[in-house]
Length: 398
Image (cartoon, rainbow, N blue to C red; front, side):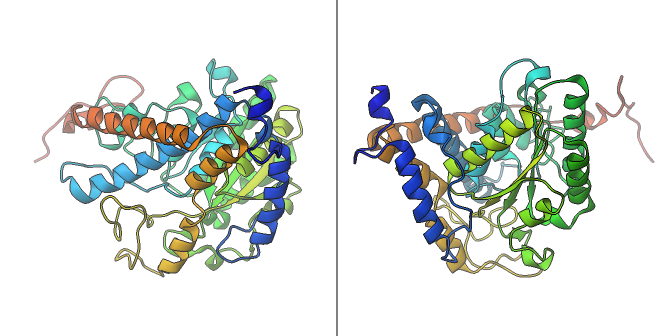
């Protein structure tokens, strides 16, 4: 496919023209309660990306999606599966769009860094973490990414700039501003990104991080994934804002609200924020309106081979999501949006998109197969890494 052809859709619209039309349509559709409320198109960086990069973004979304679906099916069917999972399905476009705008390869002192949440699998895969090693870690295997000590909620891989998941709500934001301060102190053009959910608004770490980032004009980007619920409570229980981005604007930080189901809108916002940070323009805030297809954790309400969880969750302690709401959001699926856009742009055909998905599914299947063959951690492994050097001596307690 020639460069000229790849930059045009079948109907003759350029990618830029297509994005402009999509932005107008998105603004109108945004009036519907079932569609993410966003600020429309905020730049057209994605349309200038090479075809290989655009295809890679679709593949990343698909790798995350099929990893999530396979985890859910394992939890429902395999008694030997030990992982404790908080699923990211439905939010794939956020991690993919943000990480596509970052520097993910090279020496550690040149990488952009991201800090994750207790729902880390999508962030990790989008940043470049090895899927096999990550899955082995999540299943408590001694050859996993972190030797089986991290499980799901504390995985980390500094070699690609994935600084770790955070099992608590909040502290990662402050640590990320510390990294951003270090970049500024040594004159690096690196950028620190933290992902946080809507529940982080009500934590002191949220406000401390934004305050310090603005005071010191740090190369820091806060990506708030507003999937409407923290655990089982709607975010309106803890935030007075319809757009939590308003809280960032109060600190004088440039903030955007984007459709988190559209990877290209997310990329555009992230690219703008990264460029600002690298040029010394200070912090940015991105609120991505998105939705998780499963419940807070585990697979209650899910069925084998089917995407999403429906009905009452016995773990719910405050409220549960209406099934109509879940299904409405699933009508605007990140996979479908990315796939259709790239086909409309002429970047790939439906058959090529199917081939990318088949490749992603095969990779996921191989990762789970490999992880299941790895040795489990032993009780004695819990005595390792307690001290900087050496191990805790085992002893029998009477």
